[in-house]
Amino acid sequence: MSAPATHHTLLVEDLHAEVAGKEILKGVNLSLASGELTALMGPNGSGKSTLAYALMGHPKYKVTRGRALLDGADLLKLSVDQRSRAGLFLGFQYPQEVSGLSLSKFLWTAYMQRHTAQTADTAEFDRELATHLGYLGMDTSLLKRSLNEGFSGGEKKRVEVLQMATLHPLFTILDEPDSGLDIDAVRSVGETVAKLHRPDAGILVITHYQRILKFLKPDRVHVMVDGRIAKSGGRELAEELEAKGYDAIRGLLPEATT
View (spheres, rainbow, N blue to C red):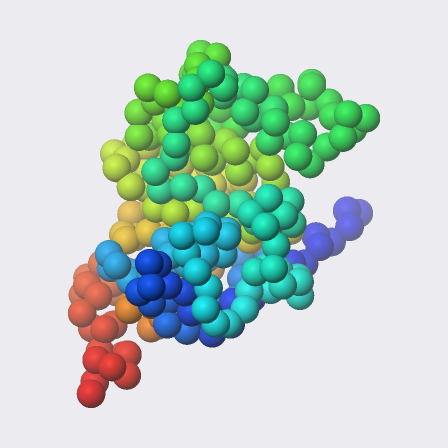
């Protein structure tokens, strides 16, 4: 009988953050747990990406109040590298190109973040990589090319998922993984993320639309409006937003009713 999965939590409490002196996050409260797949939806400018970057420690995003705890430890006191090693991973909306660094070398470096020279197993790495490439429908020729250089938007998003699969983070934040993808690519990315979701890990998917959620099937859906969580619910909330839009949600905020 296998041992039960370790339980982890990421707790965000009254988080305020600003960019260039302008407050974007205005008191975000959010709880994530291992084994759960959570969706964060909201209109443009609502603060979804700001939340992701603030949690990851991007210097442009200044946290002014509140806290974020990963298994009780103060995430905000850690450097970006320390947050990554603690188990937090961010899949970017616009992945960067890195000339001269092959995709295979990049993924091996990610693999070594959770191994030592003694525990690293090239055969295991190759098996996992082949499996994940198969899930995503990616050609192995991409492994020899420079990271994201000349890659299509869909290929770049798939590389983000490959990195997540290789790192085995405790909590993954995917910032609009469906942005710019056709329906076949959305299905591929969504189904792969669902397959890779582990009982000892949590995933937060940031998106505008419910199309990727049809393949991810989230446990919880939160809606962010004007820098705060305005409403939370199950998968049916995403369907409600698809039908009614965000205007009905805006009215739930105190400022909108004054």
